[in-house]
Structure formats: structure tokens, C-alpha cells
Length: 199
Image (spheres, rainbow, N blue to C red):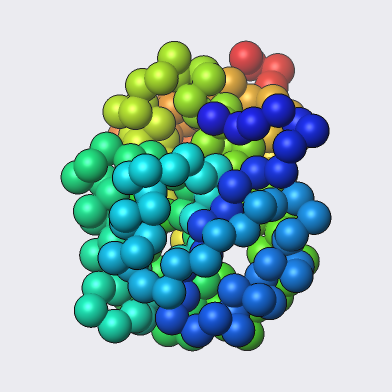
């Protein structure tokens, strides 16, 4: 869960290139208390002992890559919004990242304002899912994974869901329609506002 609004959120940056950490910390340090992990093993140890609100993670790293790290976190039932930040962004990696439940994926060189925007969306959605699901990791994972299954870039969809305060229960109903019928209001971000009237 998020800290009090007066405090910075805790962000774990996992990358074997320290310069990436310096760049990210300079870009988001006003809102996030950034911690550096030079590899996935170190990140795993930190996540077992400390709370972080979000993790920014490279994909290609020595010994253990970012995907392996995320699989280990799922096995340990550690739920944290993860944004992959990588120079290896291709359709296969995008698909695998979302299948693992990543909140988003951003290509290097990093577009810093886009990173800030996507971090905010990821943290806010994670908090909402926890609050509205009464702590149910299964329900939270269900919504995340179905969105990633059907939509390549969920950024605009998540933005509209937050903008119009669409309840998670309504989002789940639409995803069920998508599964049964192949279409729903979520297909067109401009139509999501109509779900607010149905809620």
C-alpha cells in the first residue's frame, strides 16, 4: 500500500547499468525514494525484507534476467507493480512481460515524462485493486492478466478507468464480455466513460 501522501513512495530500480539508476533517480526523485539493485538476485533479497511501492526492472541482466525475477516474486506471492525498462523491447518480450503481470514496458532510451506518467498509473491502479478487492491477490491478478491478454498497450485504458472512476467490478464484467463475445466497451477508450453511467 502507499505511504502517507506527505512521504515519497519507494521505488526499486533494477539494472546492471548504474547510469540508468542515476538517470531515473534524477527524473523521479522528487516523488520517489529510489533504491538501486545492480542485479536481479540483489533485488530479490531487498524485496523479501523491505517494502517498495513500484519496481523498474531491466530485462537482460547477468545470471538472472528480469523475467526470472518476476516469476520468483510470483512464487513468493510478492505483489508489486513492475515496469520493465529495457533496450530489448520486441513483440515477444512485450507479450511475456504482460503475461507475467507487468504493469507496463518502456524502451530505452527512456522517455522520462512517459515513465513518470506510467509509474503513477501503475501505483494508483495497484492501490485501487488492493483496496477494492479487499486484499484479494487472485482478483487483482485476474484483472491485470486479462487486460494484458487482450490489449497490447493498456495505458490509455487504465487512464480512462481512473479518470471516470470505473469500479473494478464493472471492469471485470467487461473483461468477461470480451472473453465470451470478443468485444466490449474497453476496446475503445473513448467509450469507457459510458461505463460510469452503468456503475
